[in-house]
Length: 177
Image (tube, rainbow, N blue to C red; front, side):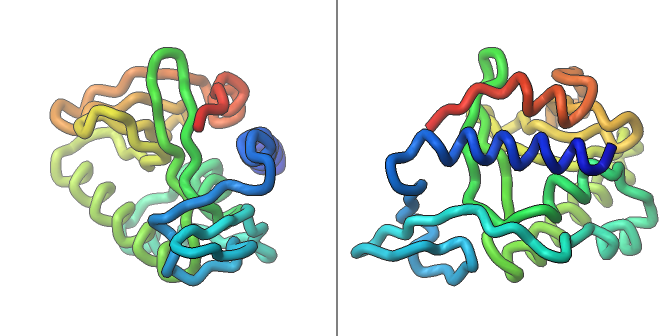
């Protein structure tokens, strides 16, 4: 099953990258080193995903928070470095969160620790955020107990199931730039 999560992520990434004539570009990532960078022109960086061999994992997050993370969370964040990728799920525009380099991965780990620690304090179901939305109080997350992809209300903690797992979530995403 773990390899199926990885294949689904890489298939979506390939679809997303294929919409560009050369490669995705970013002004925000311009001055930030990354193995993803293909070339820089003026204040723009052109990039491609960088496959992590060996893959990374979120073991530090598990140790600090004291929980076991769903295997799909390790795959989602540990397979590749990339720029964030926009997509559409039903009527929701979202931005899939990806780590750009080692420093960004460390920041991601810290943010996941803070998010999961806050959920623990509030006695909420643990979730692992995977995407932001246009609404600053709503994120897309993995339900850590079930592996379902959910729309999470950060204020109320309400979880609305979008897909049974990461694979079916990726299969329903519409490439959008």
